[in-house]
Image (cartoon, one colour):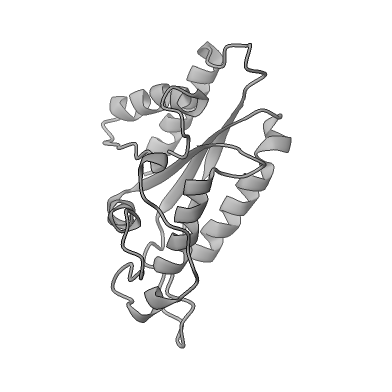
Length: 186
């Protein structure tokens, strides 16, 4: 979860999404990235020397998240869109993972430790999704292709303004349907 707000719009979309996961018997965990210590990548390439694990020179919460990602069947990146992309802690983690998970950047090209993992996204934005979340989606598709991940789709919902309630029955139905689609693709 890339939102800094536990009661924000993105968190509201996760409620019916997770309820549907529960209905299908899927376990899930929401990790609040703003509550984690995730330093930015410095491109030191220390991670490229160890093909058996994360191998990052920075020892922070990214190590625990690395293990969680390797253990999951589906990774769902939930984030509000800030300036046409994910929030800063999610971007920092993605930068760390693109090197720590993918052992492509050393003297020899190694494996993608997470190859084949399915990745989906749930986003909220202020613009129509085709103009507010399109760059994020394209970036995520490229990230998945590069990392040998399977892009499983995106749910994007728009908020029309701070003086207008965000969540409604239609958005809840969309979130539940997105979860059902993802559960059916296992």
